Length: 316
Ligand SMILES: *[C@@H]1O[C@H](CO)[C@@H](O)[C@H](O)[C@H]1NC(C)=O
Image (tube, rainbow, N blue to C red; front, side):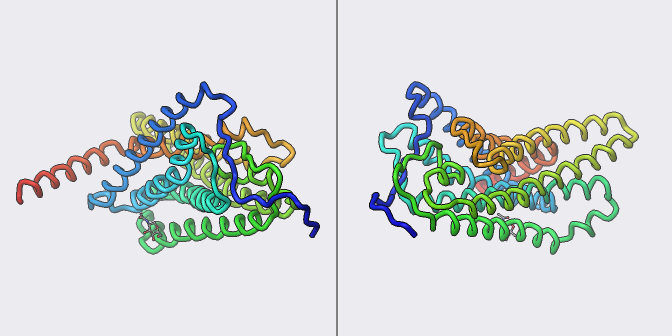
């Protein structure tokens, strides 16, 4: 390989919105509120589904897994994004960048599959209620969740291995909020053909496949709902399905545009906007949407857990 005498990069600068200084304080506040909302919502769901035995069903098992994932996912990007918005120093070390990207891809990939499995779980519950406990037995739930986590880990590992062996030199400015594939690949100076193939194939498997699985599940659910006798039940089921579809479409839609477009269509400003959908908006909305669907159950669990805490305190 040809070696030029430019300096080898040991750190990157995450530009974020540094071109628009008047926007930084506002964005800082918005991101901070979103981060707090996402953390609180997901932590609450995680604690409730763990503490209340009435919520020990497959659906809540997956929901707990998802909440745990969202907490980690937002914590990989948001603290650094917040710091970069107020600090002068916007650098991230080479290793820091690789680590951030590793967890981002790993958790993002796992989330794709987990949302797919959760839609399938609803399909089984609504369309095959008599066989539900058999279809979603304990072993199957554990295996499906484990496969989601392991495939995320594997996919991310492949990406990191083929990206960070590339030579980086020249400009070390990354025009993004965090280390994501397209903006980092822009800074590599070797041949990125292999990377583009890997991105394309994994986006096809993780994003497109899960998205189709979700759409088909919800389509079958909607058909089943249409045949329901009670108009009230129909409307309730319909409104929960549509709110899910909106959140899921935002998440996968942004992912598809980001990772499945040709490299030549790279547009840093649009990327920054799109990335907010899957790093902030979905993690913030998921706990709200998923617990609203089962408002009564979640409220009941909250009441029982609070009552138990009060009882424990007064018993001391
Ligand atoms: C998520 O699922 C995996 C695989 O079944 C399991 O090992 C892990 O403990 C679960 N995590 C939570 C927080 O429930």
